[in-house]
Length: 474
Image (tube, rainbow, N blue to C red; front, side, top):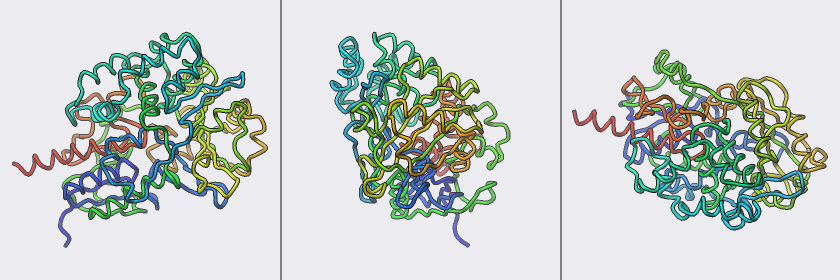
């Protein structure tokens, strides 16, 4: 009879795989169990539309991935992970045919806001430039997983970032800067007036200036495949097509880590109502396109950008987010779009392109948002519909089917607003632990939250490792 495993991880998304790697690197015997037939969770790549068009069903652009302290400490390049940088990380077009940009260059970004706000933007970012590695480690490792290397710098960032975005917005005189920054905040799919939303915008802006907003060559699956290959080289095992309904379905192990929603963890591990207070937020409606050519943007800058935000004013963005969070599908959605094949020709046949867009809708919404999304794109790229060869749509029910962590279509695995943005999945200094001493939560439902960066898994693995060491010392 085989000996007991040291650790079992449920869910082969980036956080689950990262947690498994961290434990395997410490010499533990680790196995991962994934319900789907392929690894990846929110970082997968599939032919969703036509042969030869490779789409990312969930996450495609990774502002926090390339700068992740967890990923940077792994030799993932040896396993095929290569980051590709578009000429511009992001562009934000306006109705007058111009656009603001989020560039690798702070000066270029500031200049796109206009003379009244250029200096304000440079001064806002100046204290943190060149300090990404320390700031990201300190910020994303909290709470109590590592002592801050630069507590003064972290506190300074907190004084600017903890207030709502509406406070940050007052620094800018024109809406070009306000709108672009509001779009950055909207990546966490929460109303702009919430706690720490200013910090969200700052973090995404700093990520672009320090490391860019790259895409992995071949698609997001490359991240998951690299983590899996590294884990196997460390002696770990990954089992796909294995749905876990209760803890007894798994082999005996000293510790269990769940890259799942808190709802699923409570059900599988028999934790009862432990996470009844956890809230899920607004959802998205996503469309993947196969195109006959590049998107015909009116403004020049979006033609060079990996990501394009569509929502011309800060008021438009705030209204769309408030409506989706309040239970109404917006008439005029705010969109986040991505153009992977601009920098990665392997994603589509020669001369063709892949493109995706999503808008925010209420959790669990079952309507069709296709026309609303395409009307918004046509507003800034007339003739877009003429270039569509095929489309694959996914509303909240379909997204939840693709990834069980997207409860009700919430791709953040839990509302990233209010106190739950900072203290998730509940108000606790030990967010990864559960009342079962051998069970830990390692998904993006725990700090630091959504995004393909692996830090929730990294932090949870450290918590589990410490618990095992403590048990060994008894």
